[in-house]
Amino acid sequence: MGMQRIYVVAGELSGDILGAGLVREFKARHPEAEFRGIGGPRMIAEGVDSRFPLETLSVMGLVEVLKHLPRLVGVRRTLRRDALDWQPDIMIGIDAPDFNLGLERQLREAGLTTAHYVSPSVWAWRQGRVKGIARAVDAMLTFLPFEAAFYARHRVPVAYVGHPLADELPLTNDRAAAREALGLPAHGTLLAVLPGSRSNEIRFLGATFLEAAERLCTERPELNVVIPAATAARREELEALLAEREALSGRVTLVEGRSREAMVASDLVLLTSGTAALEAMLCHRAMLVAYRMAPMTHFLAKRLVKTEWISLPNLIARETLVPELIQDAASADAIAARLAEFLDDDEARAALEERFAAMHAELRRGASRRACDAIEALVEGRALPASVAPEGALREETGS
Image (cartoon, rainbow, N blue to C red; front, top):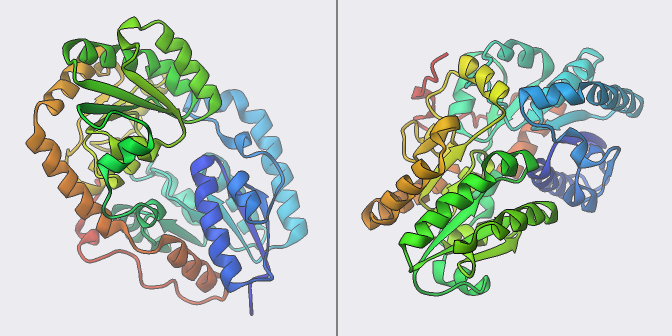
């Protein structure tokens, strides 16, 4: 029996990329399948009938979410009705856990099969949520081995599928070619600065990142800076901030998108936490993670978070490979000082590049293919594929 109808709900651009990969894989196996839910340009291009714009769910931070709650509740109600009328073979929530897990639970209680792709950070905080997840989903599909270990320990059906970005990015890359492609100087040192893809992040960190870059440029005539703007709106915000920093004039190249090329071209990356840190790791580049959030969000997070690290490279390695400067520690002075240490230590950067290349190889498992295998098994009532975790991953206890 082929799968006829798949309901899929993604919450932001990273989810749109994952969803498109998943839909492409499904279509190759089930050419007649129909798709609807919420997706962005990539999922829509693959044939997903998107009921709301992708941006609808892109709300970040505890405090920020509360402001948008009434609208989000209305969207969830509409989607629930839409999915139940359509009766898909499965509903797959991609990321956006605060929104999707509630929808998944409602649909599962109403008799639909549900899966969630991309584990929320329950291993880090609100670990009690794992009970809610067990009620919401028939299976969790995780990118990372330590996540699969956590769910297996809590008896939630899980498939470790590897990371789609690890599949997408090459295991070897060429710094010189990336510089040439972006029109950047072939010689000298290059710092890539990624202040985030959301307006909030630019607000909290944009000026600080540029101040740190300005200090380094003043001290180091051989240093250039490349800043990939995630969207046209972010580009405008960054241009306004750059206009206030005369010392950066002629030293900064602002590009739209192309963040991976910018990272590959660089010797060192300064970024906020999140997917960008994983991308930098998969581009095999040394990095410094700095992060600030709304004070109230930070106040709550400090009391709830149960993990030593916030950046994915450190969480995957279970050790501090990447320095992390959080909230008050993320001052321009501290950032500039840590970056300077890194820039002066060629050996440390080379060792990290080597370590990241090895971690990349481990995460490369054909994620879209494995995710489809797991979803087919769910729909057909078979056991999930035995891909919970590679050798050694289950030794990892995450402090629950």
